[in-house]
Length: 339
Image (tube, rainbow, N blue to C red; front, side):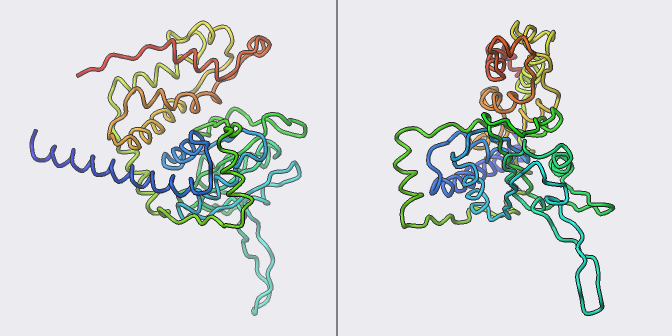
C-alpha cells in the first residue's frame, strides 16, 4: 500500500469517527426529552443525514411532533409545523404575495409560508387535498416551491417529516404512489414500553423544563451529507440491493411466491437508491467507511414497505407490506463477495 492510499484510508477513518461522534451527540440531545422509540429516532436521523424525507405512521400522542422539534433544536435548524386540513390551499403552505403599504405607496411583497424551512412537520398529510399535496411534492422532489412565476429554492438541509393516522380514515385523501415513493423511510411509531411510561410522565408533567442544546448546525449537516455520499459500496452489496428491489417486483427472477401471488406493483429503482443512501449512514454510524450487506438488511423494511402495492387478493388474505418485505429478505440470497 502506497503513501497516498494510506493517507486516504486514514482520512476515511477520521471522517467516519467524526460522523459517528456528531450522530451520537445529536441523538443524546434528543434523548434528553424523548424516551424510548430508538428505531424511530435512528430512522429520522438517518433520513436527515441521507437527504431524504420520512413518513411517520402512528396514532396521536406518541411524541412525533416532539421528536421533530427536538431534532430541529439539536441541529439548530429552522422548524415549522403544518397541520393539514381538507380546506388548505397550496398558498397556505408555500406563501403568497401580499399588498403592503410603504412610504412610496403600495407594493406586492412575498410572505413566505411554513414550507420554506429546514425541518417541516407535515401533520396528518393525508387530510390535504391532492392540489396541496402536489405543492408539497414539488418541494420534496425539486427542493423548490413555485408561486405564480416565482420559483424559490429551499435552503439545505431540507427535510419533510409527514405523519398520518393509520386508523382514522374519514375525510382523508390517500397519498398517491408517486408521492409515497419520495419518502426515504416509512416508520411505524408504536406505543411506549411499560418501563418508559414513568420517565415520559416525569419529563412532560413535572416542573423542570428540559433544555435541548445544539450539537450541530445546518452547515455541518450539509457537510455530513457529502460524507455520506462518499461512502463506497462494494459490488456484492450493490447487487444485493438490486436483487432486493427486484424481489418486490412480480415475476422477476428474485421474487418469492408471495410477491408473485399477492403484489400488484413492486419497488422502482428509487428503492435501490434509498437502500444504498440509508445503508451508507448506517455504515458510518457503525464507524465503518464502506457499506455491508448487513447495513442494507437493516434498512430494507422502512425503505421498501411503502414502495409496493398489495393486490386485492392479498388484502383479503391479510397480507401486509411488512410481511411481503420480510418474505423477500428471506428469499433473496446474499451475492458472493468478489475479492
